[in-house]
Image 1 (cartoon, one colour):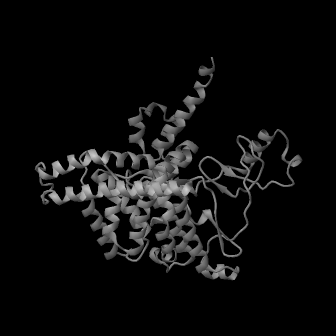
Image 2 (cartoon, rainbow, N blue to C red):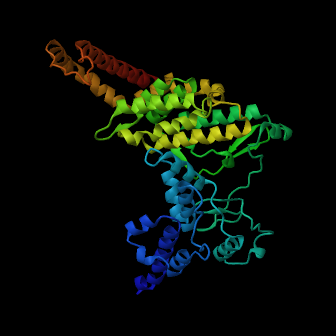
Image 3 (cartoon, rainbow, N blue to C red):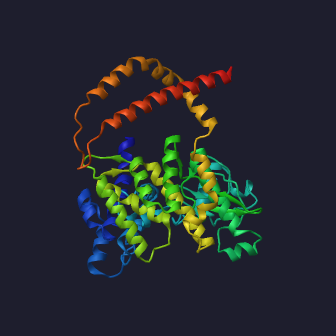
Length: 435
């Protein structure tokens, strides 16, 4: 009986979805979903007679990407969340759609304050006046699945600490508030480098609405609803990309992007590299020259799917984080480039990426049994490797390149021997140091 009691609501919801899509220019999608019969008869009549625009229409004069964003907003939290996820994958959807859908992360229309009041009273089980001295019905912010009002916490009510600070603004306004814009940008860049490349847990959406400047030239990152995690190897790869971007070495950017990616069936990495070169040339030749290099990285990532080059979601979040901090920087100091922003943090970036003795010891301790096993197997492996080097199998040429030479095998053998010996030696030294 319970399932049948939900049927009217499900039918009404299907009709609402179909009608909003149909009246907003997505009739092909309604047909593809088999929902044409669910479209409201009243909406059909209004649209046919053109008496006036019915309530289901969404900005028909707007470009298609913006209209799609508005439709997702109209259809509610679940659809907004889908749009937010899609916005993070410009390698799967056209860039203009990803850019339009990114507004769903911070420009979602709030629901009425009286609705927030009703929900809070239901959750707390008492009138607001008996619990709080005051309740501001104007929300501080709205997002896809929640709206922020300062209250207690229950399953449906989230309490958040109010942090008072100055939102990002042009430098003159910040100086008038007693803040140092240059120092704030330097602190923000260093904080992001620390999150990305040392801690491996980072804010993935540091746009101006998610940043506050506090007294003492401190930077506060708000709303960690979108964050990313990077394992040590991913931190290094992402760091190499950012390092190459900051130094303007776009060939190295291409190398590191391909090293980070997976190649799908029929992948064309050479075509991807050529397309990257064209994008960079167009960027330098066009009106965007000297603009956001972070946006340029996002464009480069968007090329991946076309050539079977698949990037992990973590790299997309890194790019989004860089775009966000770049947007904040542009608001504070429009003349500061991405490279200039990262320049003060370059030393911190290098220190985070280059191996330290402590890091080597930690890695050796973690992999000590692997190193020990490799060292014990060396006596058996060396004769086999030498035999293969004396009579190597023919190596076919790849893509017209010179066949792999015997020296490659020698180098590989030397690397194996050196790695095993060094690893075993570090592991032994670490073991002695720990006793």
